[in-house]
Image (cartoon, rainbow, N blue to C red):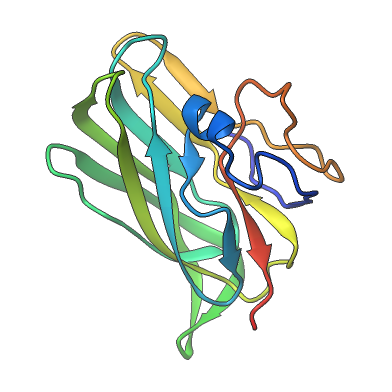
Length: 177
């Protein structure tokens, strides 16, 4: 999966979480999150791959998202891949230089006509840029086929637009009050 990066966003249907995007792609429950605070990323999976049941969800954790803890799901295994961060982060009086880079749920079966959520507890580092989007590329593996929700708008582009067939779920970063 490509590296996640931030880009400025204009108000649009993707950023506001319209039903068009929520019904077609993997989406995040909340469209905004506060920098320097805890963030509960809820990935909504509303369909399989062309009618086939989902059997694995992999989420790439973007730089600046730290202290990642995935929520276990009954009937699914959860695995994490850890690695070094590109910088050291302050977190509750300590320093973090490595952590979870990817989370994967597997071993379960989510039929195409059912809906479910996959949850990660995180902290958004204080160095992230306000009023930008933070993207979480997701790969959805099904009994037959794979959907890669990994498209991230080019730097300086406002949004995915309606032409993107595989948008990565994103959240607009808000300054700490």
